[in-house]
Image (cartoon, rainbow, N blue to C red; front, side, top):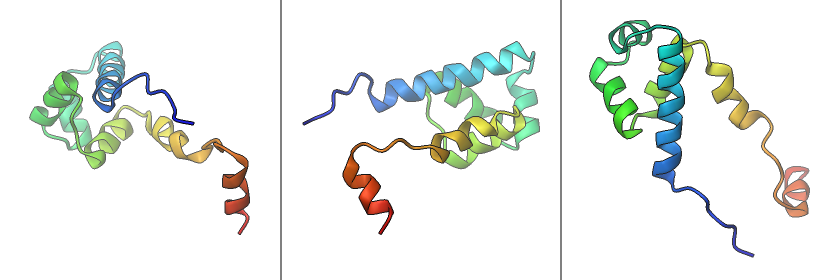
Length: 92
């Protein structure tokens, strides 16, 4: 059975960028200040917030600077099983 895809990868990227932007603004941090805090160039931060495009290492640096790295970590800590075969495969 094929899974339905409700969002494209680009749409998910945009939502992630919007979430990071909202956190940055809520904390009254300018893009320039976030660049200095994270070691990611101002241009990369601006591009990320505009297009959603960024390298994984830059995203990790931004998350660490905003003290939200636990959210990234949690993506991979408790990945749900899709079916019983995945459970069986993990025990091998």
